[in-house]
Length: 72
Length: 479
Image (cartoon, rainbow over the protein chains, first blue to last red):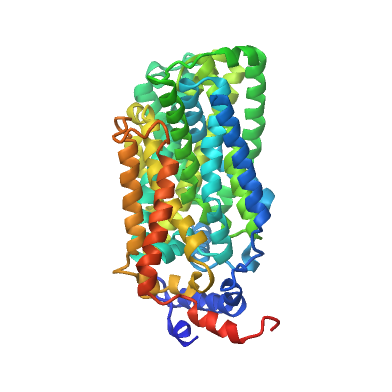
């Protein structure tokens, strides 16, 4: 992971303390969660589930059908 | 600026710049629903409901308001997941997709396009205030649209910006108080309207200003609501980076901004059908009661001034995060004062045109972000947090611009304008009213971005997490 570690924080206008804190937070994320990310298992918090998408899509589908029926 | 306010804002700017870890997360599903109802119920829903009620009848208005707002929200809802997952501020994180400089272009689009939302909120408050003055026989110049409504709109903008200037604690107190009041009063007004006119009367009314054909009426009403539905794409990250889990972020925003806030739009659609006017504050006088006039004014004041605050505050935070040397007061002024130019009757009457441009912009942004989420940022191509916080990382792309995102933005915009020209409300290619414009443009951006990334951009760059991926292959999963 040498390329990752060597990439410093470089944000326009950010002071050194802020850069240090961002660096620490990112390092923490990389240690704990990047390995989860590459296998699509989420990040800082528990991952969204397929059922969440299914519920939303069913809701959208029902509204669409309702509108289509009203138009017909 | 007092030291207390200064510290609050500096903490907030600081907090916004640092990715939010799981220990910083404070919002669950219920919190999101409450916040988004408060943010959602304002001029934008009242006015889009009015436009809908003037164009189609009640039985079509309800599903059109629900479809136009909920379906675009469902299409862009994974934006909530992205920022909950990475904890970055929305525009900082968007650099991974857009490129560091093209992200700045989108920040500019976000701030300038949001002046319209401030103007509509302020002017609707102005319209309700002049009705109130007229009802109680106040001074004539304050009960006329010009200059009365403009003066009240300026005052609303000033108060909203001032509350935003005071910082997060005042903002939280104000929005929590408003949310409970708004829901209670809105529910009561719907009950009174149904009681006064009756459901049969409302559903038997014909729209006052239909288009030349029924298809154009329906497609136009859908398009206005789609504009509002997609508009939330710009506002997810400010909230969901603080989510306790991705599901809470996903559902809280989806139903808070969607199904629940739609009650305001449906109420306004009914008002427009009964009273045959665009301005939803007209019913304050129509009801004919001093108590109703006072409560109506308070409702429009809280809903709209609260919303101005909810707009100016994150805009100013985003602006100051990008330009840290700017003072807080200056940032608030920059993010509010230009809205004054738009606070006039001509712009107020052109809400449909504004919504169409918002559908164009937010639909293109949403399409690109969703394409990246579903088709690109998987496995070793997931975002690198370190790259987001370094302007010379792989997310520099080509001079700070991701060519795929640029091409997708241009393609979606051109397709939208070819299908629906918002100023003249005409269709060059004849596809509108058959397919509308906002949702198809979203899919144009989605497809063009994915194709350009896969056949071109991804072949020229190293996957951001390739080394993590290689490391992971030699580490047993159990460790």
